[in-house]
Image (cartoon, one colour):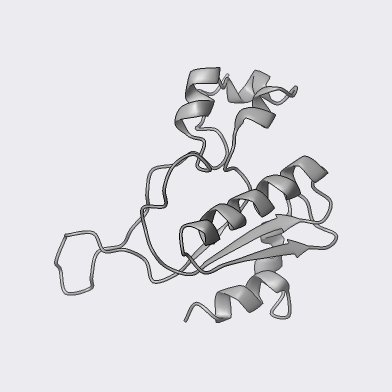
Length: 136
């Protein structure tokens, strides 16, 4: 059995270093985010057997309770085939960002779910690549 991975949406901050060789991290100019802001609903489902979320871990990574650390536009994306609780979770997070003065957009991709939503990278006309093209 392979070791457990971090729960969905619970990752370390990822920032890039400037190309000049300066190793200090810099903040991104925009972000695209997928569901995983309030992990407690997942802890109450059968997937928690793999996630192993405890109430303390879920509380610590409940991004709706934390002020945003980076100020930039954010696209929050959910699949249209996701359980409604997950889509609602994405909407709540987009609203959370707006309450903190951050420009956010909720994108619901029809016909996709949690495990295939990134397949849109292969389609130049998809919602995902449309959002990505606005990042550059």
